[in-house]
Image (cartoon, rainbow, N blue to C red; front, side, top):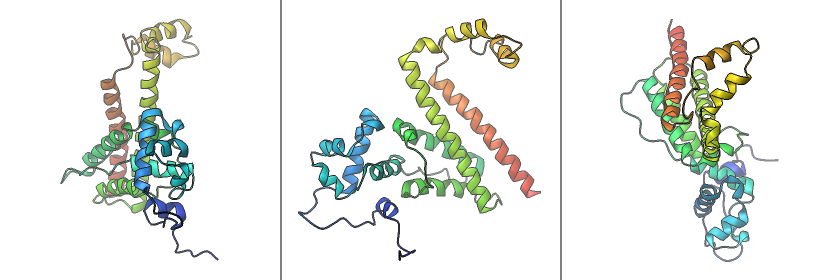
Length: 249
């Protein structure tokens, strides 16, 4: 019967608590070496390019040398997902919960943006890795003095993480689309919508187009993306603030 107190193997690997088999010659690699190489391959060529063989070649080792430390590509991706999310920065001392979450949201977006492949990794389990849990902890800590229950704090942080991850993924995709086909983001979009939209079927969208929202030389501007992110982030935090006020009453 399995020992319930024993860490699952993937968790032990994430926390550096899984022993490396001692058979054969002394290992010349560490798990950290393998993770750094895998991240370097993904940064240069994308997540799809990552394989045990390619990472081994990057390190100048055999593929079997990797398997002594990491049992599969899925384990390697799991390690990459935690390592790429570098530890959070120090938060401004004395900041209120709202300023703290703004700082948290911007910081985690900046961390994700360094590795565009990160958002391609499926989220199929709760966070177990030390870096992911550190970000979770810092977000919860920001809400320490709000009077909210621990469950409410968790819901707010996870909701904000979902928003930031989605925003990052959309921005990465749009940037790639713009680089490939700038014309799709030009005034052509406004012109096309003006011609194809029937105000009887698309009354709200027709009104938006008529107001000139898309009538611009280019719909892609990195600065505009930051402004839109801030606007949406403040709307989310408005909802959190209203919830905190209701709870305090």
